Amino acid sequence: MDKIIRLTLGLLLVILIASVCVFSYQAFVEQAYRTSLSGTYSYTCTLTTDSPLSNVTLFIPVPADPSGSSPVVAGFSSRDIAGIPDDWTIALYDTGKATMVKVTTPSIAGTGPATIAMAADFASGTLIDTRDPLNNSAMFRPVGEIRQIPCSPDTTRGSPACYYYGTSLYAEYDAAPGATVTISETLLGRNTWTIFGPGSNGYETAVSLEMKGEQHGWSPMSGTLTDHIGMYDTPPLTA
Image 1 (cartoon, rainbow, N blue to C red):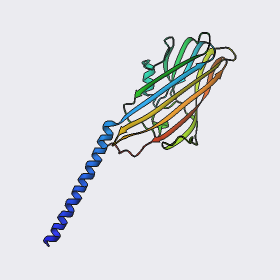
Image 2: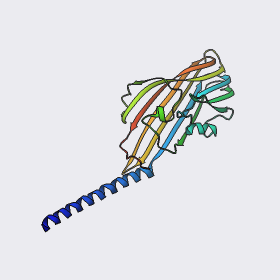
Image 3: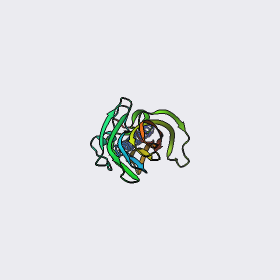
Image 4: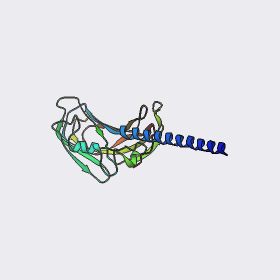
């Protein structure tokens, strides 16, 4: 009987030690994830023209979540985005379906080609939803005609899903009939952390448009979205 009791107590002790080790490991992993977790949005906008433009008014889509908010929106509000020309007057507009930045300027380019490049990185302050950015994170809106497309062969990080979608931009300016203007924007949302080594996940979206001659209205932009990029085996965060 004493031998059975000793064996039982020994087994219970092993189970207790194993349980403590598992709990301690899980607690360490969650703590490492929580304390090292960082979310960042990287935004770029590039306008190129091969001819002078005058009397310019643009409504450019700004990446925002469904409520119309994002660090990029706040960045335009405070002009905390590198590369905004000094002679640009900017104002934010929330249409209810999209957030746009209105740009007005007397001219772009004086006697020839010009490129204006704006860029900024912003801390998100919270975990970025990189699995479903369409419904929960910053996107160029409104998002229309979305459909899934094959991912390019070099998109091999994690199990990505790729999409095409359309949105729109307003342009009003005078230009020569052969003038070519291209506007492109990109946004990368990325979470990073360290648990025994660096890890990350993210999503990427981009929109672009090429216009010919003078413009006096809305034009469609082509967009792409790639989500589910990277690692998703992270521990759930408890309150």
